Image (cartoon, rainbow, N blue to C red; front, side, top):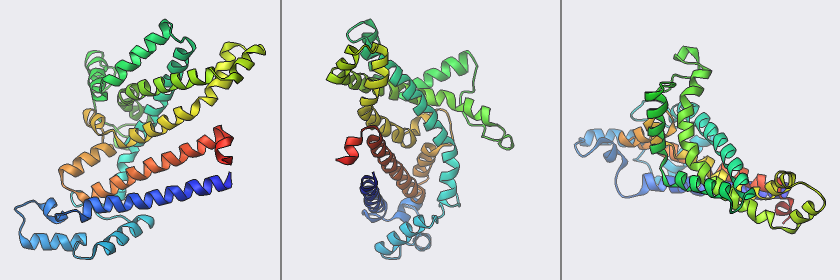
Length: 318
């Protein structure tokens, strides 16, 4: 297991290094001046010169890159132009909303997808299978922001069970509390989970059907193991590798791709921060957020690789 982890960790670090170069190159080295983009065409030469000095754009690119990466490694980030605070504080504040939202949505996704996928596979070509596949196709076809609007109309406007948007905070000092924060994230989590669960349910069904045709499953059934026991004790574990692959990508997507849903529910999350930073031309915030999101994707893929080895020992020995 040790060499396997070392190899995967080396791949993770190399990927992060390449990602940092790409992010820096796209936002710093492409034609155009970041100060001009931030201040606009009407900026005076004096204001452009002052902002160039503040952003360090008067220094060579390799010096700016080394300073940026070195600062990240030391936990030191630049100051946002539009918020006048460090990007680390901004990101940490917004992750207090986006991370719990992604976790809630992922838990709902896994619960729905595994249950529906296994149910459909166990009733292959019967009414239950056809019904689950029809629902999953509908879930894939309809965008999550439409689900979000529909949920607001039903549960916030008609039934008035929850608020239509906003986030009260996790503590009483912020005007909310733990339960109030969870309630505020239920509808956004459901809106995100419905689409992801539809995709993962189809993957689960296909993977379970493939494993059910294997010889060891027929042997287990021939030894007297019930269909349900064989399904949950033997088939599902061996079908988890493709499910983990898609699930890991979905979790990364739930953290990095919630811009639309967070704007529908007016949530102060990481997606809304990116949207506001782009609107304000705050490239410093955009750069650090994009790097964070790239790191999340790489880290999730690393965790999925480790889980592969836990589920199937042949992978780590190979």
